Amino acid sequence: MIGKNILVFGGSGQIGRHLIRRLTKNNHLVTVVTRNQHKKGAILKTQGNPGYVEIVESNIFDEEKLSKLMTKKDICINLVGILYEDKKNTFKNIHVHFPSLISKLCEKHKLKQFIHLSALGIEKAKDSNYAKSKEEGEENIINNFKHSTILRPSVIYSVDDNFTTNLMTLLNLLPFFPLYYNGKTKFSPIHVSDISEIIAYIIDKSICSEIIECVGPEVMTFKEIIEKLLNLIGKKRILIPFPLTIALLTARFFELMPKPLLTTDQLKLLKYDNIPSGKYKTNIDIGIPSLRYFDQEVKKYCYMWREGGQFSTEKYNSDKDLDTNTS
Image (cartoon, rainbow, N blue to C red; front, side, top):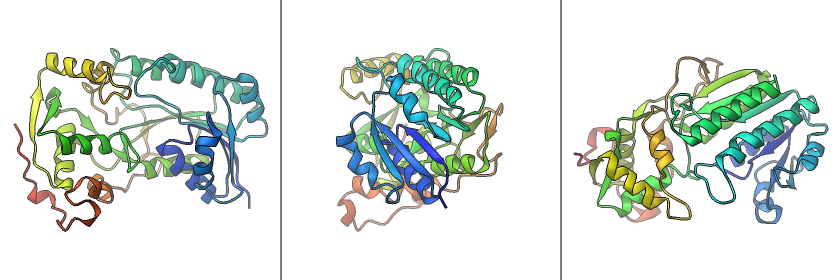
C-alpha cells in the first residue's frame, strides 16, 4: 500500500539520507530536491526502496518550479540549514526567506503538513545571528501555514556528522583541547536515527501546529562529551579552560578557513545550554523517546580515530576506567 507523497528539502545531508530510508520503509513516496542532481542523485537513489525515491534538481529560490513540485504533495519537510555564513549562503536567506517561501507554498497548495527542522536553545541566544535567524524563520512559518510542526533538536550526531567526527579529529591532532566557558554548557545529544524516527512518527500520527524539542536520553556538559570521546578513542589530552578573549581570537582565526571549525557566532551559542526549555513538548511527551545512548552509538564508528583504526586490538574502556588529564 502506497503511503503519503512527501517533498523533502535538504535530503542529501546526514539527516536527509537517514530520513529517506525511514520514510520509504513506511511506503511513502519521497521527492528530494537537490541543487546538483548529477553529483548527489545516484547516492540518494540508493537510500530508499526502488521506485519510491525521485530526485529533482532545482534552485531553492525558484518559486515557479517549487510551486509545481508542491502539486499533489501531501507533506513538505525542510531540513535545509547552515552553521556558518559564506558569500553564497547567509542565515537570512537560508533560515528566514526560504522557510517563509515554502510555507506560503504549502498554504497555497493546501498541503496536509509542513515539518521544519530548527534548533534547540535559540530563544535564549539573542546575541547570535544564527539563533535570531532560526527564530525569525519559525515565526514566519507559523504565520504562513497553520499545519506546521517545528522540531528543535539538540546537537545531532552520527558517523556522518560535523560534531563528533570533527571533535575526534581535533582530539587526535592536538596535545591539548580548549574548553570554552569552562566546558559547562549542557547538551542532550540525539542520534540522527532518532530524529528520523521522530519525523516518521509525527507523519504517522498527523501531529501538527506544534513546537517539539528533540533530545536524547542523556544530559552532558561539553567537558563530559570531550571526556567520553577521549575514552572512546583511547587518548589522553589536557583540557584547558580558555578565557573569552583567547576564545574569540581562536574563533576569528578559524573563520579564515573555507569550512571554519568555529566561528564567533558559534562561540556565542556555546554560552547557552542546549537542553529542554520546559516551555514546549519534547519527543518524550509525544510518545517517542530516544533510546540511543551517546557512548554506545559513537563506539560503533570511533575506531577510525583509534590507534590502529578498524584493526585496533585495544578494548573499549568503560566510564569507570576513564583517565583523562583535565585541568
